Image 1: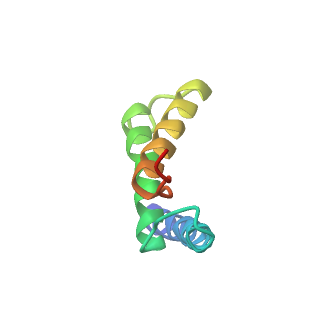
Image 2: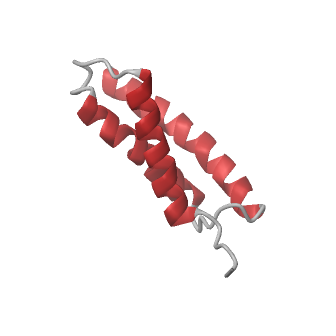
Image 3: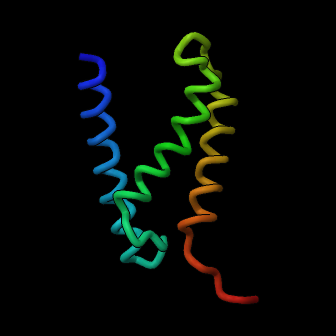
Length: 88
């Protein structure tokens, strides 16, 4: 049952992110050729470190640590999918 809940919850989150990433791509704010894949990769950048840090739910992760992981995920995501900046 837990696997079903996780699968459907993650699916809805990825769909919502993919929709938003598609809109940002159309607006020129992202370079995501496949918004669904970009959403999946962004989610992985968040979940992977958190699973390790919370030791699969056996350790509480504080707000500061959560923010650090989130900032790192966003930074990495934007390096891969952010708009190309014009040369200075």
